[in-house]
Amino acid sequence: MTYEALLVLSFGGPEGPADVRPFLENVTRGRGVPPERLDAVEEHYRHFGGVSPLNARNRELVAALRERVDLPVYFGNRNWHPLIEDTVARMARDGVRRALVFATSAFGGYSACRQYHEDIARARAAVGEGAPHLVKLRHFFDHPLFVAANAAAVRAARATLPAGLRDDARLVFTAHSVPAAADTTSGLPAEGGHRYSRQVAATAALVAAEVGAADHDVVWQSRSGPARIPWLEPDVIDHLDGLHERGVPAVVVAPVGFVSDHVEVVWDLDTEARERAEKLGMAFARAATAGPDPRFADLVVELVDEQRSGTPPRALGGAPSAGAGADGTPCAPDCCRSAHPARRPTS
Image (cartoon, rainbow, N blue to C red; front, top):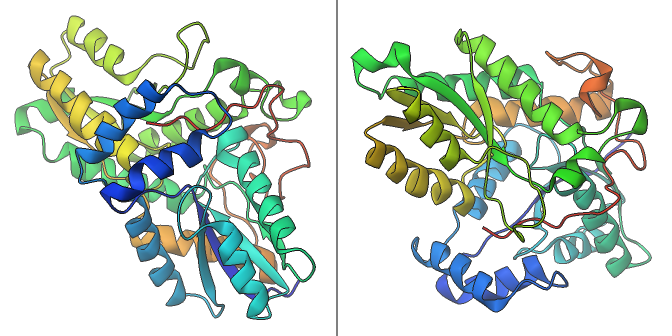
């Protein structure tokens, strides 16, 4: 199949104090989130000067890809500039008729996958006749390069702990929490649902094996929503309390659910989780996200080559039940749709 461009599609983030409130309103539009909740999240962004690191990391990825692929590389976001609608309009003006889309999420599930399909459809509808045909690349939660980049980050983080505590440090993997109902109903019925949480667990197990960890934990972070609605648990802060009660002296937290730093990482982990660990007297190290590792850009190139030239897909999980893309096939039409879709949380 011939493709004429590559679009890097991400969540987006504010790049200055004046951007924060409009960005949050874009994220939460139609969800009935009370203003006081937005006020609280806005303070998280203002703690970092109103700037999310996400757009900068994505521009670095775009630059790395332009050095690696012989295609024009475009950049668009769901919630902040450059918006995907504007980017797809520019692609159409440039004469692009068919392009690949790399979404910056390794996993299935509504927010992690299906919503990106909706972003693509919305952008094409906004452009109308002449909009390029856009093909989203597969999930990559068990790709060897994704696992290797995360494993290298875990090793580097563990090395920052006091030498006498490294061997006893607990390895804890985190990902963005979602409503439990949304996770239950994600994935094809034959898989039994839980596509998102199963893929996160698969990545964690692969990275733990790569670094030689005998055991590890999978926890969740960045919950946002009414207390009456169950979300994936345990929360990372609660888990740190539990580890302290068990006498664990040190922890390495690896945010494998995120491919790049943004406020949900640098606030929830580098600020809140680190402060809790310090209060508990627990040594704390946070592993880097995989995105800045050069192997991550190489991973994207491999995914592109799978579609352009039929390069055999590489995966360490291998089991079809692990989710869409484990064998190189694209998502089925409703593979990641939830019966009650949950919009992306806001902090």
